[in-house]
Image (cartoon, rainbow, N blue to C red; front, side):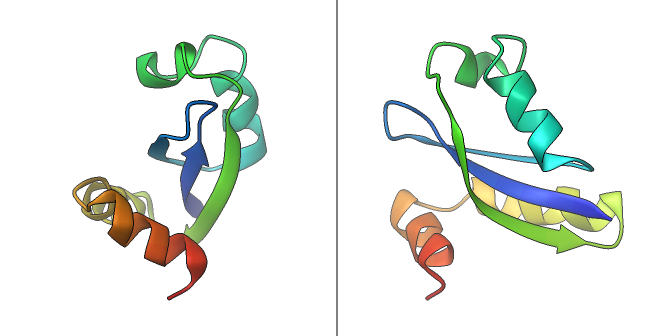
Length: 80
């Protein structure tokens, strides 16, 4: 299974990604070896995850979420 995740960074911004292991990926983001976006915004915390059966499905969902406004992402996080 693949996961799509949203991180909240120390500055309050959101980062969306996909992985097979969310905990391992979070550790990479918080070790200064993750995405360029998160390197200067540590620490990060996982605030949303969603499971997908295939990498293709996870990538499509990640792209969809990345295109959304902050308020729409917040509604997803809040379960609305």
